[in-house]
Length: 379
Image (cartoon, rainbow, N blue to C red; front, side, top):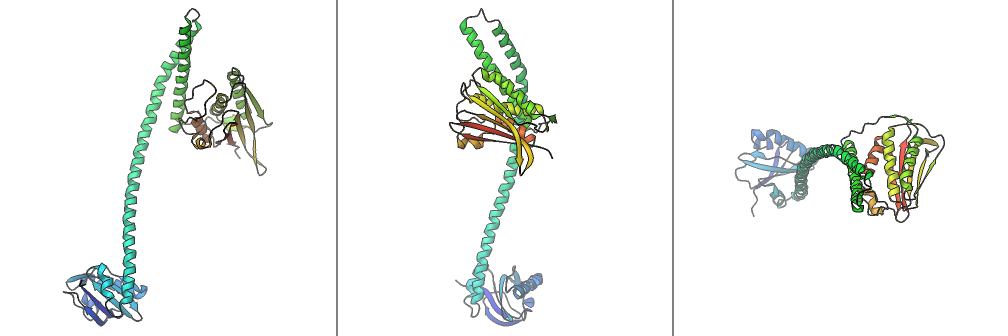
């Protein structure tokens, strides 16, 4: 296949020293490269020559050589410049390698074109990536908008359900108090209704708490608190509930714990969630340990930790990473009849993190679990 092109040797200033091949119809080469190109290509020709001189190799944008647009490739050879000009840049290497002394230029053209094609391919991939990122950003924004609507709707629905559920629970309790003359199956039905009513109330309250947290409305009412008093109050309350199943809750605290800036109601809610979970997973007649103590790092008191340990069935390792996510339920079976809504640990984590603290868990199947809250002491 015949390749149209020019091959010539010139000085660094563009003066033509030798015309090696003139196989480009409609193009003529004058005494200099500058005289050979159209006025519109003059600056491009100067930049091309300068690139060859300084870099040893260069490729031009299309130069108008008389009536033809040609791509030029040049290589410095001592004090001379070897240049080929072709219509199709893909044919430049094949054209150059057939001309004596132009073989190194042909090799450099092949290498450059290969790199250039790679750059073009990378540019296309990068453009596709940018387009995909923009589309992803639009999708994420839309999902965030819809998620906001979902949280708002969920909160509104839960809020509207709170009053009738509270009223229903009151009616059921009233009926139970006056149920002595009712048949046994009716009293059983009322007990089931009360259980389900209380579960729905807990679900609504949990959804309202979680919706508020998700929307960023965790407003802390901070005050100087004795954390021991909060934890002791929780333990005393839970002892009453746990006593029905013969479960003993032990409380161990260190002396002279520092007062901390906390929201006592929200900290109480977080600790109560953990102790309630521990009781629910502890077998009848079992024990739950609650420990409260200082955290000392490098001899400096940095915080206070609360540990809640049960002797329940434990949690499989593969379920631990999902434990604090909303609506998560582990595969281990609770040992109480208390029904979970799957939001307690998610709410607990958000409340503790709102105080700048952390929560984690250690667990071993068959031996139980230990949840640990760490609250930092302000400097």
